[in-house]
Image (cartoon, rainbow, N blue to C red; front, side, top):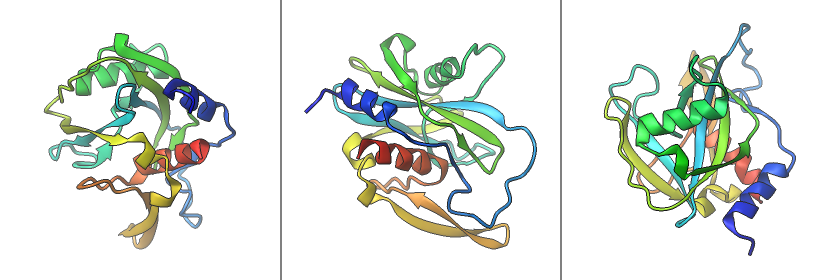
Length: 194
């Protein structure tokens, strides 16, 4: 079996398009207007082949308690979206950028909240003990890459939102309910890996 770097690089090179929160909601009109650029770090640990995810603080105004990649909007100090993802990962979970091998970026994901998220795929080398930033992150945990890249483990569920049922992808793992934009990004990557 090829090593982790090779498998991830091969997946990056495969055809795959952008995704949106609207993929499963064909009857919803995408609002006009500019989208806010953002980036997330899709970080895979080299030693354990696990993906680093966070549980957002329940005190946050937007998406409290949801599962997410480390990341956020691109700030003026970020020359690139990759810089934004690395900065956010350092701030949110204490991940030193010098431990991160960036492999490339996946197609962007448009959210219903007006963001255009670019997932930055990377491998984390060596030991790393996460330090959650208490104001933003209540927990840092890891999910096996094999779990997240198995299309059979994804389900389509739904909730009522803005007067209609809105379907979305989920990929539960133990006590963690991974859904929404995070699950959609992961589902698109699972297609590339399979």
